[in-house]
Image 1 (spheres, one colour):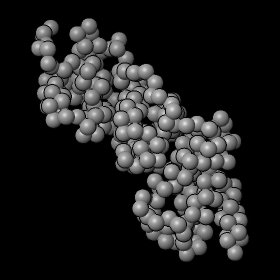
Image 2 (cartoon, one colour; image 1 turned 90 degrees about the vertical axis):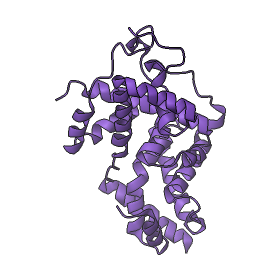
Image 3 (cartoon, chains in turn green, purple; image 1 turned 45 degrees about the horizontal axis):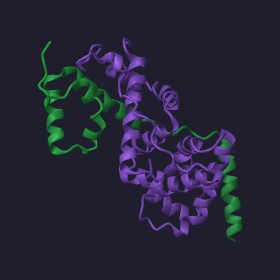
Amino acid sequence: MRLLPRRDLVCQQAVELVTDYLEGALSRRARRRFEAHLAVCPHCTEYLAQLRETIRLTGRLEPEDLSPQQRDEFVALYHRWRAEEE
Amino acid sequence: MEADGELLLRLRSGDERAFVGLVRRYQEQMLRLAAGFVPSRAVAEEVVQDTWLAVLRGLDRFEGRSSLKTWLFSILVNQARTTGARELRSVPVPDPEPAVDPARFDPTGSWAEPPEHWVEAAERRLEAGKLADRLRTLMTELPARQREVVLLRDVEELSSEEVCSVLAISDGNQRVLLHRGRSRLRQLFEDEFRGVR
């Protein structure tokens, strides 16, 4: 086991910084420390890639179609509004 | 999908189909969002319906200073909050919740049980069109406040500033909730797809 110098990040700390890293919310120094850790840690590199994939997959969620009944209800709502406008 | 700007133009010109198109696009997420503020699904449905009426009534006043969807979600959250009497501001972010189960690290903080591969399996499921239903279910496993932020940021792709404005939370809280929500979803994906070929 490699003994880590005091200022190096450990994995358990690195995974807590992933969102701040992706959000650009780390200071320049903290960002460098984080990237230095990634450079030597394939597991945390994989973890970051998985977080990015999580975001990507979530972003692919398409809205469900309305049921015909819902559609009718919203058309009715629209007409109610039009009637109240006039 | 048609851009919101075009939908808005058609709405203002009195196109009923444009309204149904807008509802189709946002109804599901609005319901999901409203559900975190009120006690039941039935009340959430009422809140969303009231929101749509408020949107129609406010169409002429909408000035486009925010995006259409940010405006929609702001109206929704205000309606939901009034109905559910939940004041977001007064709710503190709960105690720290680690992104990864501490048992997966050794005493020095290095991975003892490193992340298992699942990205390819999830991608294949996505391409086969079989991911959406599962993802919907996984989203329900997030605590309401994390789900709200993930939904607005990662599903609806609002900016962090827009999310803070819609939910009336600070940037710091927004980031903490986003972090916990995304971390938890990652774990759910890992549980779901590890070892899947």
